[in-house]
Image (tube, rainbow, N blue to C red):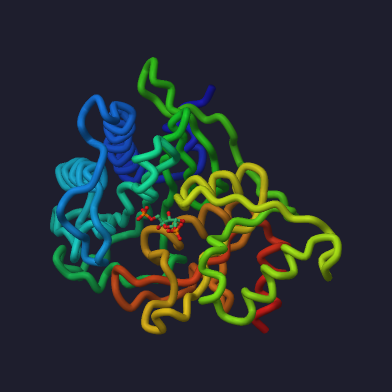
Length: 322
Ligand code: AFP
């Protein structure tokens, strides 16, 4: 089976980017090991602190963030980091050529039930003019990403990654510690009969998504004239992995409870990387009002509404917004 290195070379990734990705993944392998130790290593449960977004941090959030921060800042390739678990950007090497954004442990509440969790990341070029402590360089639309992906810590540890030449799936071979290419150029089915949304928020949604989901639930008796199934992992990595593998639509829409917060998921380290992976696999990533990857971020922790998945189903959902 092909190794990650040769696939990246085949996709035309420059050497420095390959080295950076390998460094990042070395950190993810360590997280994979720590996660698998669970209760034995005393890493489960919450800390007493909250992140900048007011969410209680799990011990594994803090451990994973520290591992990635240390690995990336020591590498020399990175000028600065933005992380879900950091208040502001973390300056690294002033001469580094790349910026890395990540959610170190997405779905961390799933650690308590030994369920799916993962690391989501995106990489862009670092502008020459930028000072490492300057957050403004991170405020680029997703179209500027040079690589994005996630590592899913499940029954096997898997990597989904794109450098703009298709989305490939790799599986970590723990016998020698390398990621091996297991599904090259994955394609998301254009049609689906499966959706993922947290339906307990239904009363807070806007009209278009209310109508869309009601029509899905109405099944064969409704306007769609077919039955749909619903799944919810409560970790975006788990839901998106399922959608990549067998199709579906994943939605985290705008919530009227707080008009100042346009969604739950973060643009830089959740929505953008997943939209890049999805588009490279033939699917779509939209906010309901436009392409996710064209949203111009106003701040590093910005949130956006998210519709991701099978092309025809995302188009159908978008049509309710018009
Ligand atoms: P945590 O990382 O705080 O557990 O949040 C996970 C997440 O951001 C995303 O991965 C899920 O899709 C979503 O939240 C789940 O949200 P609900 O709490 O509405 O199930």
